[in-house]
Image 1: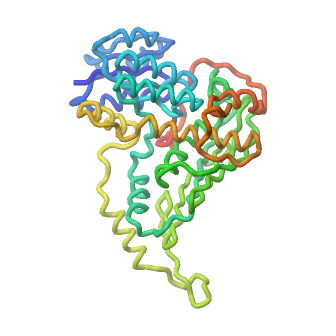
Image 2 (image 1 turned 45 degrees about the horizontal axis):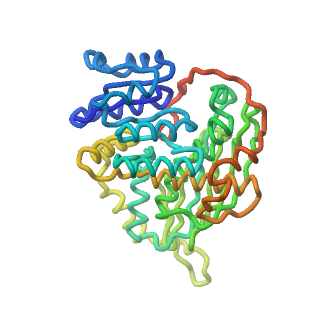
Image 3 (image 1 turned 135 degrees about the vertical axis):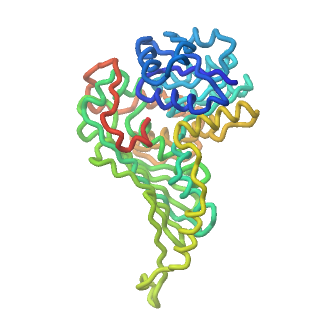
Length: 392
């Protein structure tokens, strides 16, 4: 039976807590840790029933967690700027780690985290919970089937809406502590999925960004990026200014197009090359049949990924999502920021001696669109479950 500690008890922590509790045959939750211990106490009261609650220790510092020899896995749900330090400390203490996305603000920090995992022999997984969704699994299965033909493009709307008070939380809305705006902290989901669906990182990146109206935040609130693959393009809009949060992924193949939310189309040409009146109904039927035959996932989201990590530790296999996966997404985000700020096309991989690699260039060059205002230290829970499956 694996013993697990959750470090960081803000808005995302319930998904970690409930994810561990969903697998009583594999693990038990033994500790909650937060620099404000009252937050950890509240999470225990909210999500852990008696008498199990009596077995969960409350700590105010990660050192108290790491001092325990019986803890096997630490899940880290703290602000991004703390991920590298806490992850490395946990790995050095001999703990397996599941860390929230983004993995870290810089590639240098990502490398240090991966190096420590390799040295310690412990597993490191980065949260990418949206790979564990039925609708995303459908996209991946259809792409891998070859029924779409060669992929020409993926179009992604990572569309969110956040009011001004969202950035009143003390660590949000600054380049130093949050690491960026929706490009990093919201589109991280979609950028991971784009690279996963296209089986790798792009060759180059072009981008633009601005802050349209979040006047209490230094960082961007909308960006647009184009990722160049050998024979495909991916376009990504990342924002917190879209009313209604109309998120969409469109995969354009030579023979058919599929979308999430689910839609499939397949055109054929008439004699002059224009779309014929009726499309390729046989191909559409094959794609629909493939989708219908896919078994539903037993668990989805954070719960599914936590289950995968627990199973990986128990059986000695690598987790489905590695530190390298998390690093790849951070590199794409870094390239988007470099392209937008320096107004250049950025080739990947980013060289080790590039100041963008270490994160120093971002802190030195990033525009401070507005002066950060509002410093509420208590995270506010979202009032709606709308688009919650993408939440971070």
